[in-house]
Length: 402
Image (cartoon, rainbow, N blue to C red; front, side, top):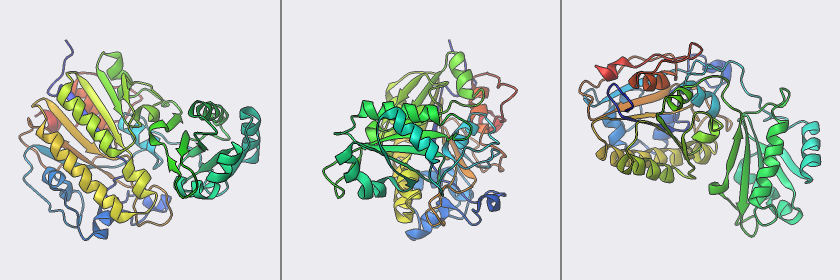
């Protein structure tokens, strides 16, 4: 029988990009003044998030509409700083599970990709590449989608992230063919001079520029594997469940993952997470990424949309909590910021919240800020009586076990 100190199942839910204020080194990233939660709340005159308010989110920052609640018996509330040198999805998630990334992935936001890369991609795929600049995924379909559909070319574009994205209409470039092209791009982009964190397949459908829609269900991320041992590796090697919901499997390139459920929306992600909470009997962790905060609202600088998305999450948190067992632990956190009123469309270098809730916690309170996201993964290992690798960051949050 698999052993555990207090919690049989740990659910780590990442509200992708929901930061709670600038890091001490924000100036280095041109992110002074960023605060995703607070600015989203201000855009609608105040948030209504009663479940996360009751867990102590209001103690982590001054968030309009959210009261600081000192008495949250069943929950601890903490701010986490990022040790790694970056503010991207992979860096943040990898640090949660113990990796300290000091060499950031490359970005090509201002210049597009080198012509030599594009030439090689065209030669190896047999398809012309169009675009090659930084753009919103929905906007570039309006500009180039009809040309791509007509010619069977590939729309290549990037963003403020370390990413190469390839979009193609499913009628002229079937999804398996798009995946083949992305696999070629991933191989090319493993070279040091081109190394980006992710290559993403972006299939779309529709009749014309006014009706094109991205096919979220068939999106596929081609990432690089983590650069070291993670808490997920250790859990899996010792027979514990590591269930990946959303894009978690892609972020870790499948390494350390036992089971994968891909989801396209936050609601789908929470549906699956609550299903595993209600219906499945396992020991280990369920690691969840809810991407729409970042993809639909942060990068698009839609502050009211971001705020409503936080409120929607809170309703699902209420549903989740109502179905928890005494030996379940819920962790709600983020991987970076993406302030929806900040300049540009990039992520922002922010601290992240960590709300820890269980019916079995009896001494919940605000805890002092901690120096790394990796305390999340190390707490999971500590709960299951496992030791981290010497290369890993993190200390357990021992208050959870008192």
